[in-house]
Length: 332
Figure (cartoon, rainbow, N blue to C red):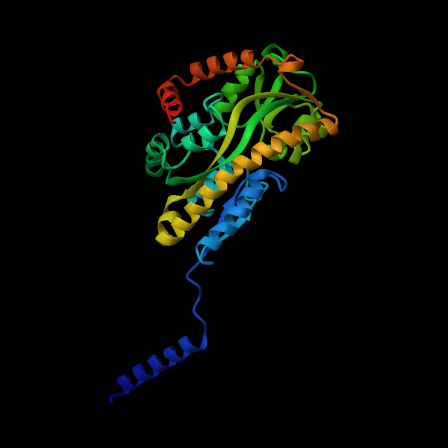
């Protein structure tokens, strides 16, 4: 054996011994999952339970760490982080992805769903309309919608009674910083004022905006009853959030882990419908108990006037959505 051969043999033996001496690193990586919901919001329950269920269904191979309450940034930062791959996945409004595929905003359009069950069917990643737009999102944004979360109907809160769009005329009203919300708030008759959710309580307290709209779960979890006196049960939008992932990260996962994640998301989406329906019934009474005045049609709320005004404004601002709205309406 030559000197070089002996050296190579010794090196090989040393490496082999080292391999036996130190454990191999796990091939599984922890996936970072972000959202802007507060700790008490249904968004946090959904994300936490989904992460646990995905781990269970994958045989403990899929590890998902949830970052709630804008810990990884506001909406724009979160979406950019997922696109860049520094965050694996997260959830927010479908319309937050409209900068990549404008038509995705239709899934947040006011008055587009018959009820919560119809909304979940329409936003299933396998549904015809969403599957078509999802492929555009993959190509145009490097993102993929892999699930959804139902939060329930959104309602208006303010520091005074709101019964008709005229009550909000020329008033500064919080809009989610997304074009669709700006359009909808114009339909309310108000002046759209974009405010990130983390800044909302302060904006309401200081009078930067006089009102906002959200599901009752969020209104309660974020203690908006401390800075708002009235809630009008307009139900102008059924709130669904898209769960979306970085496409490269998604495709790098083994097929069985993707299947486990998809199955966990589908299961929790169905459960979220039940959570929202049960919570809304209890929260009306709870918010009354916390001092809020709840305005329904029995108290003079003109839901038809809001529907007419908002639909007209959205149709003016998004004329290309009409065929998609018809297709969503046709989903059984």
